[in-house]
Amino acid sequence: MSDAQRILKTLLFSLFMLLTTSVTSYSSSASAIDTTIEKVQTENGTTWVLSYTLNTPSDRLVFIRNPDSSRTTRWLPKNSDIEIIYNTVEQQEIVRSKTGKPISKVSFLLTPTYKHLGKDYAPFSPFSNGGNAFHSGRLFACANTCKDEYNEWPITLKVPSGEHIVLNGKVVSGSASWVDKNNGRQVYVGKQQPIITDSAVALIDPALPESIQAKLKNDMPKIMAYFSHSLNPLAAEKPMLFASYAMVDGHSSQGGTLPNQIFMHWNRNDLDKRAENSDFANKTLWFFAHEAAHLFQPGNTDGVSENDEQSWLHEGSADYFAALAMNYLYEDANSYVKRRITHAFESCTQGLTQSTLANAYRKGHFNLYYSCGMVIHRAIDSVVQQKTLGEESLFTVWKRLQKAVSRGMPPGTATFLALLEPYNAPELINAINNATSDDASKAIQGVEALYQMN
Image 1 (cartoon, rainbow, N blue to C red):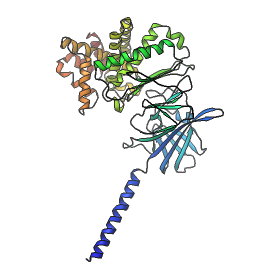
Image 2: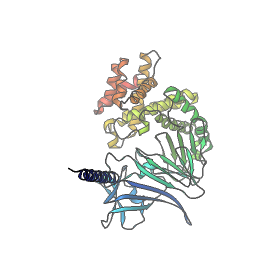
Image 3: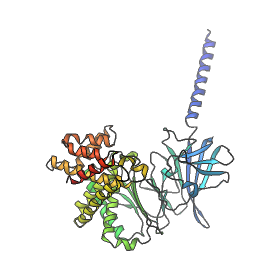
Image 4: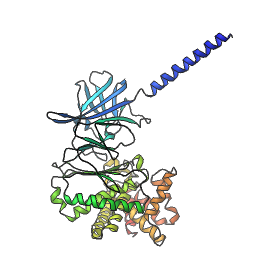
């Protein structure tokens, strides 16, 4: 082969590799979707517009999170050829063209009011002064189908003049762009400036009763400090607190956590009257302490799933941690905490006659994760303290769980229960196994045995 032929062959090979690399790069990003959400000021008020732009036209869009079919009524397509339907077989909402055309860009007018979603985060959490927090995970969409590799969503948010964005504790004007993942995050849009304390960045609705505002502002640092001391301090930047109040008819309240975020929302229009009741003040503190406890649980950075039988571990511990925090910080709350524990036991044993923990999610009995889980954690705390003569407690077990997860162990019940074995407490392990079994009578017996371990 001549030198000229060798050079030509090398050039052809290089060109082939360049083309192959280009095609591969294009294919890997062909299903990417750019998401833009914009709050627009009009003569008649404000509207929220959501747009999806696809790199490659697709037959349909589907969503990662499908707790119900409410997008079909709350998202209004701007193009009359576009519709959102709920596929009962796949149990998911689908965006498609009525005439079967491929989709390259679609836009919707959103309904920015509070909507309760069973065991999911509300799309919008309105503030009384016109601001709004929204859950970015509600926007996550995929071309044709959502595969395992879908875990990043580029999002751009635009807001009108005079309003700003609060994203990850930072105030931003005009617009912000980020790549979201996992369960998403809460993002605020409005005119309210956050309160920055030593323990958190907070957006507390100014229309909330003064007693609630004072509780959140004054007690939030105490509760965060208690968990930081009892468990391990948070490694990330200051967490954010969103406390919103829609001031509309209804009796809804909801709380939740996302990585480094706590959010609490009230709808009740009679909140001022109810806030005068001391039990309501204690309930608000418990509400916050429960959500704050989630921040300190291992696995929080990826979002802890509540949709399986292991949820008693995370919800039950958060409720019992709330009880411990309130007992330690507020002597006048002791009787309230005792009543909550008694109610948890009664609610758990009654609920187990209708569904075991293994089936609670499928049957809609989410409360069992809280009530039964708290009974289980209370028993563990008591037994560990007895076995170690008070030198260790439930917090010790959870700190070891934190360490185990940081070393690569899964943050589930198997890892957690393995950490109880060194305490040589077969009665405790047997009772937990019974309580979490799929046999209703055994489960009730297990919970009754756990309740007596105090």
